[in-house]
Figure (cartoon, rainbow, N blue to C red):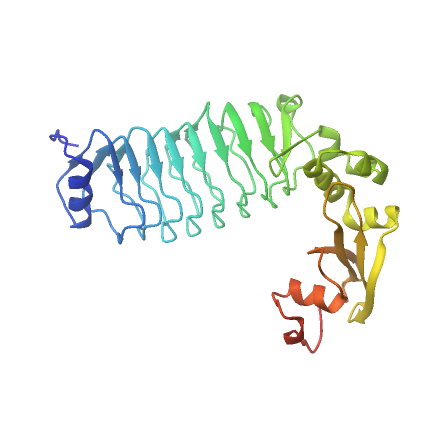
Length: 315
């Protein structure tokens, strides 16, 4: 990028929106969040660049951001330039993005809710900071080059089954809702979280040992809810003797609306039913004000008014 005289942030924004083709250099920040911007036609050098909520599909190859690059909720973003370097990269809600760029270098990466993100670059550097990949459903592996890190959030990565040997995280890892069943030796002492709630290794990896007595004795409401989830709502309801509020039948057979009173917390109410195709039984949690099985099924189908929910066959 050629040397240019620094301009004000406002002047830079105006020129970018006008389709400027000459290089833009700003010592401070450029904030174009929510602007009607689909394309950047000039090279940019600045401290912080905020393009969140815009319709851009890519960035110039010579964009230079010294600190924070914010691309949150750029729904049309398809790719990022190779060799992208910045202190912090935020890509939350970039639902069209499938891969990160080769040669990426950053300390902090937030790609939460990037529902299509699946491919990692062969070479990149994300070290010493935090990485958030919450609800990245297509993530199936973590690259060997990642880290060491301070924190790693993998909550909701349902298709992620394992972490690479040698991965180092000094703070905590959140694996709530992932498919990770064990940790490599390098992470045996790491602190764990389950969807932001600090938990023990036994709660995460030995849920079959959790009893309803332990759950009811737990004073922390958030931790208690995690323990019930890990134990299984159906098993918990059976052990504590849930109260039946209503029952009827659907394609899977008899179903029940069950209620469990919990000291210091709202009641746990759920619809116990069977899948007609697999015969597997489920306990599906619903709001505590539900009174009938039909009302609960209607709520799960997205109906606030249960009288409008009249399916020919409930599956």
